[in-house]
Length: 443
Image (cartoon, rainbow, N blue to C red; front, side, top):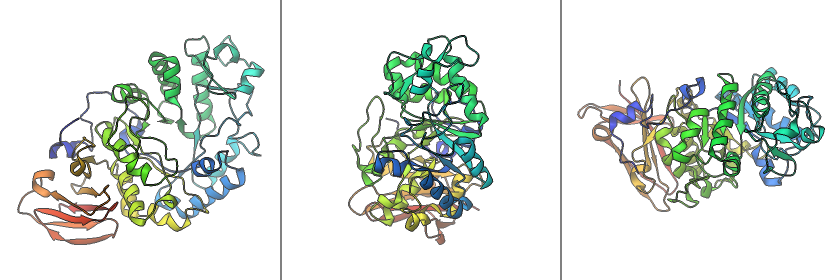
C-alpha cells in the first residue's frame, strides 16, 4: 500500500495521476469528474424485472422537474436486458424491452426535447437470441451472426461474441456506431469480468480496444464489473470510467462502508464497499486517467441524513459519477441531498480529491480527503466510518502546505455558511457515519 500523500501531490492530483499506468485521453477523462444522471436500477433490483415504460416516463419527468437544474442531465436504462429482443435488420436492439411501445429513437427524442441526454446500458459483445436465430448478415463482413458467437454464452437470451472470429470486429464496432447514430452519449458496458474470465485477458483487451476506437470522442465508455487486473492497466487504456466496488444492491450502510471492509480481492469486485473502493483506486482517479464509479445512490435506503450526506460527499470527493437510483415515488423526500448547489459545483469544476493515505486499513488518514480548486481554495472531507464518535482534523501547514501564520475563511458546504476565520488547523468531532466537507479560502 502507498504511504501518505505529500501536499504537493494533493495539488497535482487535480491534473495528473501519480501512477505510471497510461490512461485513455478523452474529453471525459480530461474533465475528470463523472456524469450526473438518473438510472433505472432501483425498480429492477427490487422487482427482479425490467422497469415498465410508464414508470420510466414518470421518473424522467421527476428528474426534469426536480434535478435537471442542478446538473443531472442524463437518463439511462439498466440491466434485465434479456427481453430486449426487438432488433433491426443488422441485429442491433431497438428497444430496452420488447414489450415497450416505444424504442430508443422515441425516448432519445423525448429526452432531447426536455434538454436531457440518453445513456444506454448494453454490451456490444452481446448478440441476442433473436439475432442468432435470424442469422443476419453483419455489416462490412462476409459472415453472419451465428458465425461470431463464442463457446460460452452469457445466458439463454444473449450470446458472447468471440473476438477471434472473422466478423467480430465489424459487429462490435458496428454496434457502437449504431448507438452513436441514435443519439446515445453514454454507454454502460456490463459484465466485463464474465467475458475476461471466459475468453481470457488478450481477447478482453482486444474487445475494449475495438469499442474505444469506434467510440472516439463521441461516446462516454463506462466499464462495469471489470477485474482491473494490474491495477486497471487494460481498463485505463480503453475506458472513461470504472466501477470500483460491488453493486449497490440494497443501498444501505453496508454498501457505503461496511461490507467486507478492509478486504481486497485480486479480481472483480476487488472491493465490496464504496469507501474502500474509492481509496483503493484513488491514485488512478485523475484528469486524463480514469473516472471512478461508486455505483448508484439510493438515499431512501440509508438510515439517517448523516449517512445520506456521507455517501453523496464521498462520491463528490472521489470525482465519481453521481448516479441517482431513487425514483419519483421513493426519492421525493431525499432529493435535497442531490440539490446541494455548492457540492454539485465541485463536480462542475472538475474537482477530484485524494485520501491522505491510500491504505484503506489506515482508518484516520484514509478517512481524510483533500484537493485543491483551480482558484487555490482547498476542499477537505472528514469522514467517520466508525460506530463511535471520532475526532478528525486537518493541519493547514503540514498537510495542505498553507502558510503557517495566515488566516483563512473556512466554510461548511453542507450548512452552506462560513464557520469562522482561522489559522493553523481545523478540528471537529464527528458522530458515527457523519462527515464534514469544508472549503478553505486562500484569498
